[in-house]
Length: 174
Image 1: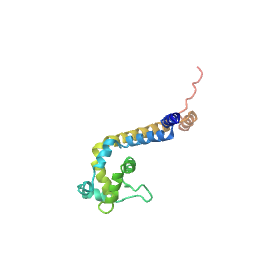
Image 2: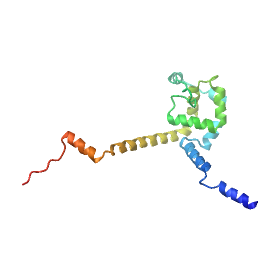
Image 3: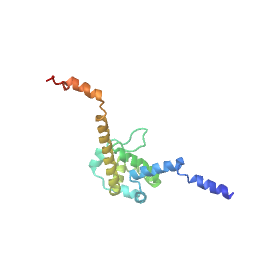
Image 4: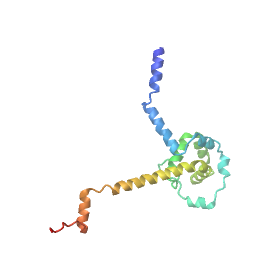
């Protein structure tokens, strides 16, 4: 019996198990989207009054006229791709946030107002993560553009030179 427990505990700590791999990927994605223990604690401190008493400008309300996409994760259309993924992750990680949103939207706040307030409240924590994600995306785009431009094959270059008359003529014999 002791051997069985010991074998079971060894196999359950195997780093090659799919659950640990998924867990690592999930934790990397959470880190990429700024979902840390510090943020989770901050979000858990939010209350209904935190959102209801938050000063919203009228221009914020009018600039976010479209609410949600049908059959989506039900987050605002005007969120960046990074913010949208962050919203989905924070709702799944922090059940209190999901419950708070359920109570507030749409009775007290529109969905776009909810996310405007949330990202304003969490801005100081999330700004470095979002900035890093934007920089990484720009680097990826630059690398892809560079790869596309360097993929010209020699025969394509020769054909282009022939079309433009840029071929080198042999020198006449002396």
